[in-house]
Amino acid sequence: MAKEIIINAEKDQTRIAIVEDGTLAEFYIEDPEHERTIGNIYLARVCRVMPSIQAAFVDIGQQQDAFLHFSDIAPSLPLQLKFLADPQPSVRKLAAEIEQHHQSLARRRHPRPHRADKSEASDEDETTEAAESSRRRRLDARLRGRRRSAQRRLQRKTSAETTTTEAEAAPHTDVSPETLLKRDQPLLVKIIKEPISSKGSRVSTDISLAGRFLVLVPFANYVAVSKKITSYKERRRLRALARSLLPEGFGVIVRTVAEGQTAKALDTDLRLLLEKWERIEKKLAEHPKPPVLLHEDVNMVSSVIRDLFSEDCTRILVDNPRLHRNIRSYVQAVAPHKVEVVQLYRGKEHIFKATGIAEQVAQAFESRVDLPSGGYLYIEHTEAMHVIDVNSGRAGRGLSQEENSLRVNLEAARVIAQQVRVRDLGGIIVIDFIDLKDEKNKKKVYDELKKEFRKDRAVTKILPMSDFGLVQITRQRLRPSLTTTFDKMAERLAREKILPPAPSQPTPEALLEAMERWLQAYRHAGGRRNVTLRVHPFTAAYLTRRVPTYPTRWLLKHLVRVRLESDPNQPPLSFRFEDPATGEDLTERFAIFQNGQHPEKIPA
Image (cartoon, rainbow, N blue to C red; front, top):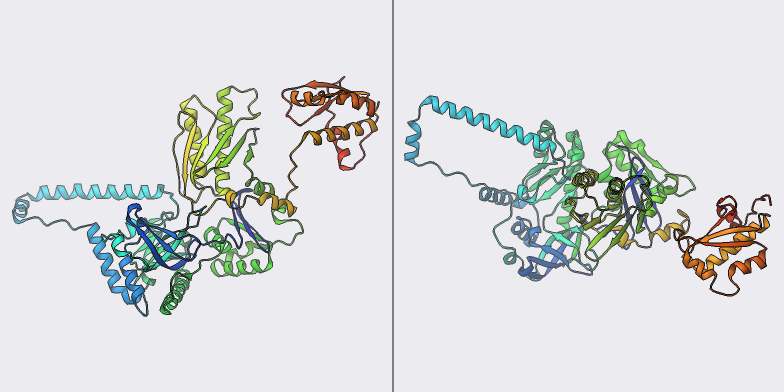
């Protein structure tokens, strides 16, 4: 799969498009009002502790207090509080306590089995040597089978890049959070979810610093490897390499892109992360008054390049010379053999229009999305969820109802997965598919959705289709969706001439004016003296409600006899002129007169 990263950098806004095989897959926008804050580390102040909702609210300097759920409190919180109380805070000073703390937690989670008492030991001694040997062989065979099963499960697992769950890496402490957290207490937190609507940021005390190949975890002592690296030998090599480089008092997570990297590359990345943490410790040594920002994570462009730039990336196209130099320098440092994929766009046409994704970008901000077969989707946002309605439209002529419904639903499933990724829709998503009777067809639609959502980096859960044709999806939400944050984006694209301006809403007066211009063009071209005007019944009633009627006025003014015909299939506020003899549609033939061009002459 060919992947491209297209970056449009304006004075007040930066837009990043991820294109996979020519189709827009992801789209990000950053401006001064909507800067990326995920990963920022703060020295916060505890405002309220509310055991009734298992959460606390902390002040990090934003408009709303941040939300800290008790499940987001790391087991190393007692060590972090001791770290903050030190006049010269240093993780390395606490290395011995960190090791002891995690060992006690591990023993609590995996207690050693009790030794057999003497009577059991004596009974064991009475077993024959043959029986003991047979038992050991059976046990060895069982263990080998379990290892093989575990390796197969590991290879099949393609979960998102979360290398280890919190429970696996560091189980929670038995001390209740409400006894540790006190009002006005300083606390070290990291933003894990940006503010959405009237809700504040969500934070965690599980502090980490993300790099290109590694994630540094202070107050930990473990080494974890991304589950996406399935080779047992490579996992063992990376684990041993990371363990040899890691200083005391820190844990580390090896990211997927580290597969095949040398010790020098990992060591360089680790040193950069340790320098960032040392800067945090220096700021804390100055005893700042909370809330204060200790570490600002990279901006949106750097985050996308760090997380999405990989071997399958064929081009990074940038239209800003300064940003092009920065990205090229970064790629030169981490992947010198891929530096040529970073290119500077010098064309006069807008970069999105030149790469053929302008219309796809604009479509991400429209509520209606057309399907290639003629159907369409409506994507709406409510306070609680996103709702998607699938409609067949004019699709499926000549097919049975079940075949047509299945065809449109399968096509809609592919487009929905793409639109959800592009718009970054999160939370609860409900899709109303066209009703299907056959259970096998319902399963086909469900399987198609699951297959398409495997491309999504966000954690997603999909439930099977219900009897009402509804599919429920929950998708990880880290930031507000594009459609709610940048609802005027389509208008801005039109102003920048990336797209033509949207047509104004038609009115009866505008419709009459268009008909007048058409008749002028038709008369000037010397056409026949009579035409047929096909309109919706409502429009026909409007044209004949006065005396004299509009067809009569046109006859007196343009000397063209217009025969009015009502057609329920004709959309309201639209019209269609036809040749009464042949039935030929003449509407578009003379529409060019509206653009100031002279209509072509036709024989009388």
